[in-house]
Length: 257
Image (cartoon, rainbow, N blue to C red; front, top):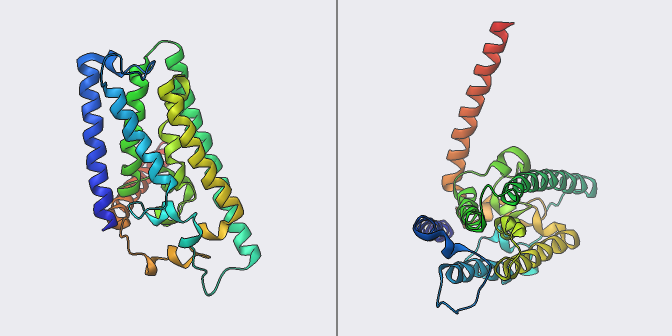
């Protein structure tokens, strides 16, 4: 059921992105973020604001339309394991997750800083920054359903249900808007930041809710979501391709040597 929900959500997001891109091609001035007033009637940015704000609301309330990976921060979704790790083992697990999260944050901020600098230099404008935001909007669910480079390269978590940074997505999604100060931008950035802070405070106060080693609800045998059905084979396939390419590079290097 959860897999179907996320599949429908991905289709919806793709439709929204394509519609936004078509508006951009027709008249990108309709995607300027300087004003949210209705002086000229209902505009595309009003619709996009409602859609993005809806994502923030879904994160604030523990409703079952979202994965337990997003809801595990709440007490009602915590069920202690019968054989929890020792304090030392759990401290090591937390430390590894935090180090990986910092790497993801550094990479994400660095990449978006480049995007922001290009915007500041006039390589693109407000409408392009909004288009990038909507691309992130789609990419978020691609990461959940098919392949997540952050999971594969940094987090190393089993699946999204156990992801340390699951609810970072709202803030990551609107990162480009940080460089375009406006009512549209800040009215989305502020709730996204609140979602992020709520998640992080819960994590630091109740880390046992976030790991399968301590939360029985996050273990595979107790998972009813099946969201990883598509992702696991895709990730394994990509990993295999990368391994083959890595071996090919090493072989060429040895041959030249």
